[in-house]
Length: 262
Image 1 (cartoon, rainbow, N blue to C red):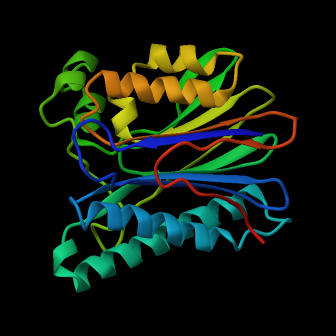
Image 2 (image 1 turned 30 degrees about the horizontal axis):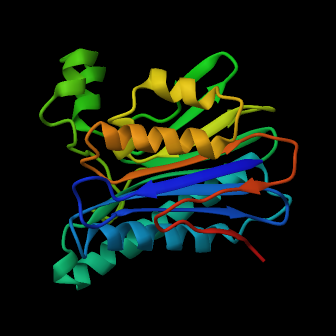
């Protein structure tokens, strides 16, 4: 497995409200998560950090003999638990009222992965036949697009494109979307906040993930592309490449965390 990570505060904001982590257990499974907080300073960054730390703690319950269904259930429960903790914290701290966060997460093995997400951060899959978006944004614009009220171009320039319909921590109970995928040697799964996906077109993402060189170089180029395109938001990207070689980990800037669970 090859792991590349990078986060940047962007060109406008003073605080990076994105938080991300990657954990590797002794069975060789890799867990990655990206959270994009909302609610401003003292709120958005609190929500994303709390969510990621809570989810990581819950994922320590992974057992070697778990089935795919067991793993998916554990992942869902981890996000539900994090939602409750962020929501209750916001209720008891008026300065954090209304805070929340998006979350995308994946747990991967050699041949398959499971996913969970809420909000508009994304998971992409790159395979030999091209790039696909694995998650669906929980946004107003996505709903308008699905119902045919607007087209893809109108969606890209819609003035309410950042209105999120579902997020972690904003309500006591939330609905988490779960998924799964198969992957093989050379395939890449990429998690990112909307600071990257709103600025880097799919054609560029596919081009960079198809490069044969180090995965970290491709991640660096995409983050820089988002910065050069305005960088109004925080930008975070975590990418995992399926490789039979020993684990390789790179991390650049921001609050990255990569550890082996005991």
